[in-house]
Length: 631
Image 1 (cartoon, helix red, strand yellow):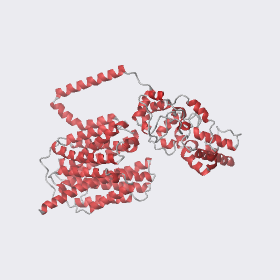
Image 2: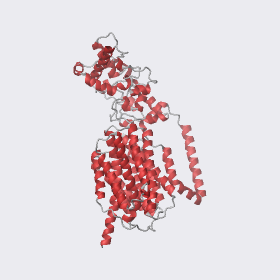
Image 3: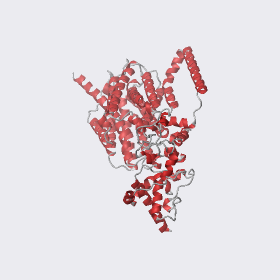
Image 4: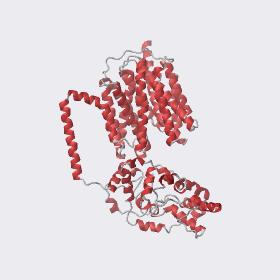
């Protein structure tokens, strides 16, 4: 009886350690720590360097534990990994400079490297062979379930960091004394996959997972359809736990090859569905299924399925898997998401091919005639479909292609194309489009959400260069815009097509409406409440990027402007009559700030209240006064 209770306690420890490791990695290392860095202004190149430090620590200490002869005790190595991880989580709560953040990131990677490899190499000692894969699935599923628990998922980064650190402390309080290393379970299906193939398969899956995760996180319309709201989170938690237990059963009954193939099918399909917002819902189902399928195998393979006879040999194999697939492929997936904003279908196909190719080769050797015949039929069907498509459908124009990109990138999720009659929309965005004109659209793109401005008449209000600059760097061109960058579209013709479509958006009467704007003036109340301090703040937020000699947009695009923007810091007012009175100059500057200069790249700021527009004009007048005093 005592032996049975001891075995149960050991299994419970093994399950708890798997769950804690996943929670730490997912909710803290991949989530809370990144938000902490963003809140402290660590971004762009600095962020990449910090995350590279984490990857270096992870790779180095994934490969090192198997060679740590001076620390033969698995329990001691596990405690060291847990201790380093916990310390890193609590250190992240402090104000972090760039250097300190890099050191904390290195600790996170190092702690996880030691923890994951030591746990995988010695998991047999805790869990044993009896129902071993079930306990692995239970641990991984419980970890993912906890990460999607709504109060934890929606908690602040500080709370998530505290929870991650506290879980490491809880694990340190466990006995952590593994039992005797058990013999391999002969009833498990013997995998015919080589270690290189398994390594490549895990790398492809982690790559897809990391890219999809970052794309969802950085695309509001996709995030709203997958991870926002308790219903989505509880659903994801249930899917993760169910898929993890299913993975354990499939590994036991069908083998590793089928699990990897199933994970590739689910994750690959999710990545393809994420190419357009309507696919977010089915992707939100397939993504957690694919992740949990391969996550269980990621623990189970080096622990129970790999042809390794000792903990040291298992540690070496686990080290290479976690270094190459867990850290290296994750970095590559994140880089793909940041640079492209999507997972190319060709890469999804290549990843699937890496996983299924060995099985296909074996099938070909056994069933050559059937495989060749099937391939010939598929090739003929694809060729016929391509021929029919090419001959029956006329080539789409640039504007039509741009409209399809507008739809596929989910622009309708944040931008409307409907000026509401008898509302503040009219002075801001222009004349109302008739119902008949809207009905002629296929499909209509009215939209009902306005995280960004209405685009009904954007083609008459913004130049093609401004549209391109804004798609490249929204927050740099438009103050604190929350719109993500679409620079990746300009790697091919899609960016130009989208700009052409946006340029085409303007209805009848828009030119007459713009002419009326030349008569606009800020109200007396706006002039009365305008102040220089607000104007200075607003100027540096919205205007300095083009109108200061070192403005980022000015420097990046100076050779592309129709006319280089005036250097307002030097009092250069080319569109303001020098002979006008100070009040007249103020009115003209406010008018330009409000509606821009038609026929140039100078945009308006129609969405700003009149008092803010008047304040900007007042600050620019002061710049002129300061410039005159220097002369």
